[in-house]
Length: 252
Image (cartoon, rainbow, N blue to C red; front, side, top):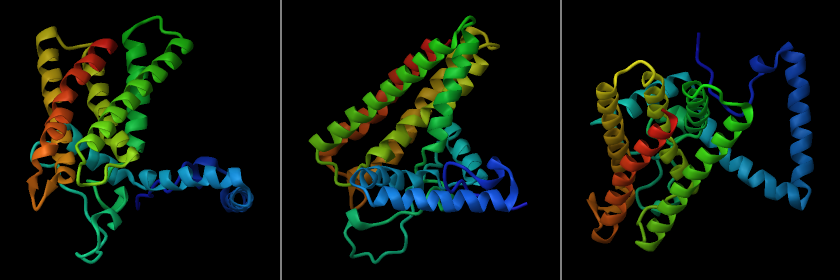
């Protein structure tokens, strides 16, 4: 059976009711979209929604391949693929393939699901967690992730990173560490201390390598890292180690 891409935030199969219900949903969505576009508030709301859609355009094959790269990144982190524009087009104007067509493209589905799974696993690891505590944990994890993104964005601006670092791209790249964190928290319930520490060390180094190889093309010209961006590149990579240990030890 062919895999269906996650084109948006719902699918007809998840809503149920067959073609008639889906047709009604489509008409209602179109009417709501037109109403929003006719208002000033609607224009402001539609812009972030439209910018989010490409980050959720993926399928099961992409998710499986991406998780494999995140857990075993060494030698497998490839640069993003461009959409066949002319070579003389400015770098800022280059469009990239969406996740469904390129495993190197950033997405927000995996980070969001990883963050939520991390919180749930943490709650099971710490018996007696209440729904209020879980909600607070989600807010805390999201706040820490936002702080990391803000720090990298500000550092990239200060050193004038040649490539364009988008907010949502950085959020996806920083949020990918939750995949390994989920596995760490789950295995932490059965592994002895020494093997668990080895596993944490491996995943911390994996996160460093992934960020290093992902950000490198944005910090380079003609294939070489620009000298003034080197502290940003290597600092962002090294930062993943203490952050990973912090997230992991808080959940165990």
